[in-house]
Image 1: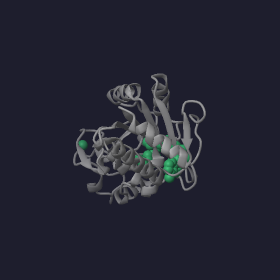
Image 2: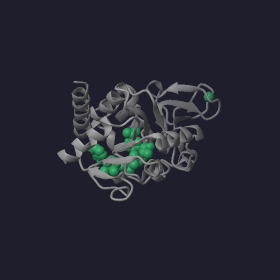
Image 3: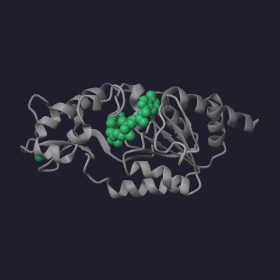
Image 4: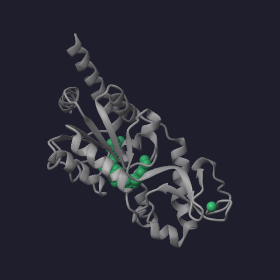
Length: 253
Ligand code: NAD
Ligand code: ZN
């Protein structure tokens, strides 16, 4: 594993354009459970069903109670971990250009990343289904369920539910980033949710080296990715960034 970490640091230090694709796994060490896997929401109910736009439209109160209010509490308490901070540091160094994320937690921006494509939107804001008025998720009154706007309309999070389209502009930006990079880091992403799972394929077809960081293999492993660093996001990214910093300092000497 240390070999692969060193190899990755070298590839990044020699790269002109790194892009990262991140999934729920990068935020696990920030205390946000993923949908799949041990401790995931999946063990309690099927998020694909409860998090589907049709479920929300049919019974917004149920979806607010089961999914949204719990997510709000978890997200409010979460802070960026060394993986978010490491990717932000690589952007600051001028090496990493874009983070494409499936997450709705906003932790990349909190960590300092500037160019972030949020495939599934962000949980920070709610929008009224009737008048389109917006309110911060942390400020909404949850004493009545579902929470309502002054106009009487029901609030929904500004994220993309299952069954909804990714905003075309975000998809365009992500595809351009994926086809322009020479190294793509895929961190904590199970690569089973489309269209995110397709971004590493675009990168590979455009000549990039795709590297995965994940405790578990994924459908990309052994096919699209050059190799998998089998470990947790935080300590792995932290070691990679330390390696890159060392290599670049040595080059300057
Ligand atoms: P997923 O839940 O399907 O998969 C998570 C992946 O992370 C798995 O491959 C798992 O092996 C890996 N993982 C677990 N712990 C890890 C760690 N410490 N370090 C690195 N990797 C780790 O997540 P997904 O593929 O991103 O798709 C589920 C969808 O649900 C997402 O698209 C997202 O919109 C939503 N979601 C978002 C959040 C969030 O914003 N933090 C959390 C849960 C779900
Ligand atoms: Zn309204």
